[in-house]
Amino acid sequence: MTDLPVAVIGAGPQGLAAAAHLLERGLTPLVLEQGAEPAAAVAEWGHVRLFSAWPELVDKAAARLLEPTGWAAPTQGYPTGAQWRERYLVPLAEAISTSSTHRLGDHIRYGTTVTGVSRKGRDRLVDADRAEQPFVLHVTGADGAEERLEARAVIDASGTWRRPNPAGADGLPALGERAAHAAGVLGYAVPDRAHPEAYAGRHTVVIGAGDSAFNAVNELTAIGTDHPGTRVTWAIRRGVSTNTFGGGEADELPERGALGVRARKAVQDGTVEMVTGFRTERVDGATVIAEDGREIEADQVVVLTGYRPDLGFLSEMRLDLDPTLEAPRNIAVQIDPNLHSCGSVSATGAKDLAQPETDLYLVGMKSYGRAPTFLAMTGYEQVRSVVAELAGDHDAAARVELELPDTGVCGGAGVFDDPDSASSGGCCGTSAPSEELVTISRAPITLS
Image (cartoon, rainbow, N blue to C red; front, side, top):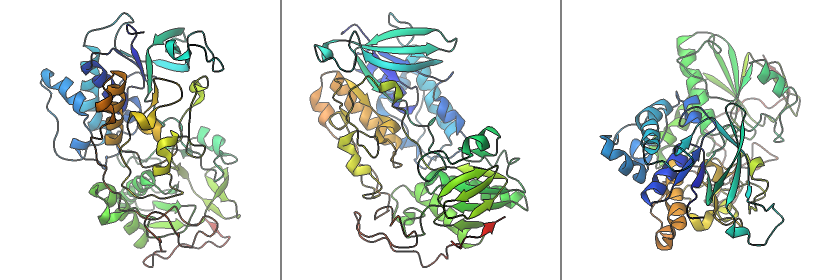
């Protein structure tokens, strides 16, 4: 199989970095991207500013590939998604595409959706000589044409962007959620203050409690500053504790900590109304109804409850995933928010990501399954190690060349059945309720 390429699913930050490492190692990448352009998913949230600084957003092998073109790595500041694409990811894709081609054509194929991955001549049940057979990827082009491609290995860097978690507290779409989305009153993206039309002078409810929700609250607060009459209600499933707004000043990524600080201020000064213990059951138009009967009547609903991996096209692959997170089992214990949300998670490499299916690796955001704590630099270390392993450099694959920054957050996710109670246990001890915030009423009232 040495003449076959390594298939990389996804031309996002980690997929493109994987291609750069493969080229540097003398291996042939074949990047399969569903979108019509590089980092198509990043383009969809281009207005959002990253909390990682430029040096943490550029892969080293990618930088080495770009340098001969006259490209210079940005060294200061925090780019938006659009700036990340324009100044780094798009030039990287061009550099990969203009390197020597292989018999299948260009190194990156856009408008190509992977619909299935298997082994040539062997379904999931067949053991005989399985690892000696090439991978077969079934793909569909933008014109609908189907094709089979062969590869010596598969690096799945397809991410989770197109699989947002629903508003429903049980993990399934709330009753009426799909209809609300189709009607345009419910969405899964962070609002953009540069395009305030849907939110200005109107009432928006934000559902979610992570960094994306912080961003949404901050964007809507900015819209409200310029447009009187704008209202924001923020609904979270648990109570308010010392962890609700992130690590603050204790976060070793200062801009990540600042996101939560700004969101907290918006609640404290009354700009944003927070509702706790709100577990969504139904959506009627833009009215959100909780399991306990409370209703929030709004004009727009923004759902930011995390993401989940698409495992459907890997159904013929032999996977060993954690049953809760849908992440590779060897890394799940470090990133499970039920156990802890402490930030020094160790860097993960080829050994941690290896699957029972030889030479198949899930990397990037997809490797974290449903966990929310992934960083770009985590993915860059993953692909460095994985490509080294595929190239036979086992020593380099085993090395750890990254120390991840601490989030400054301690304790588990909180006591589920009593949203106003403190979390006990976790990795750093108790997470007590915040005495500086008065949580909004949990009584069965209607917020209109």
